[in-house]
Image (cartoon, rainbow, N blue to C red):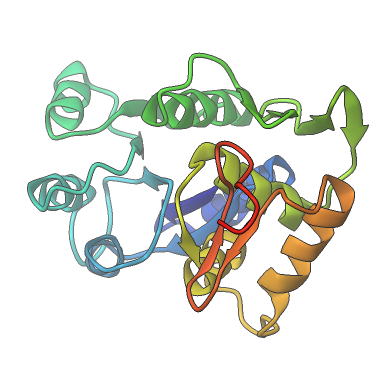
Length: 226
C-alpha cells in the first residue's frame, strides 16, 4: 500500500515513516500543501493520505477541499494539533475519512490507517483471500493452501496490491510507484524480479503477464490459450 504523508515537521514525518516501514507501506513524504495538491491531482497512485492541516504553501483543509472537489476519493486521515470539536467537524465535513489529534500513539495511527484502508476497499476484516492464498494485512502473514509463505517487504506489498484489486491490470510504471514510491535508483527490471519471486514462492500461474502493458492477478485461473 502506498501512502502520501503530508507533514511539515521533519522530525515527526521521519518518525511516522520509520514507524510505518515495518507495516509494509510505501510512504512518500511532502511538507508543503501546494506540492501535495499537485501530487494528488496528478496521476500518482496513492492508497491513502495522512494529512496535516497547518501546512506552508496551502493549508491542509484547503488541500482536502480541492482534492474532494476534483472527484478524488482517496482515503484521507487528518493528523493535526487542532483539537477543538468545531475543527474536527470542519475536517470531516470537508471530506476527511478520519481525524487524529496530536500528540498521538503510533499504535493508534497504525490501527486507524488499517481500518481506513479496509473500509476503502470494502473489507470487513484484514484478511484477503484469492485462489488459495490468504493474506493477513494486520499480522503481515501470507499462506497458500494452509502453508505459511515467507515474503520480502516488497513482495508482500506487491502481492497485497494485486489481491486488493483482482482482475485489475497494473502497468509496470504504476506497480513501480506503488512498491517503491519516489525512491531513486530503482532497477528497470525490479517489478519483473518481484513477480518472478512471487510465482516461484506461490505458483506459476498466480500473476498473468499482459503483453505490452503489465500484470494482473485473475480472480480465477485462465483457460488454456486464453
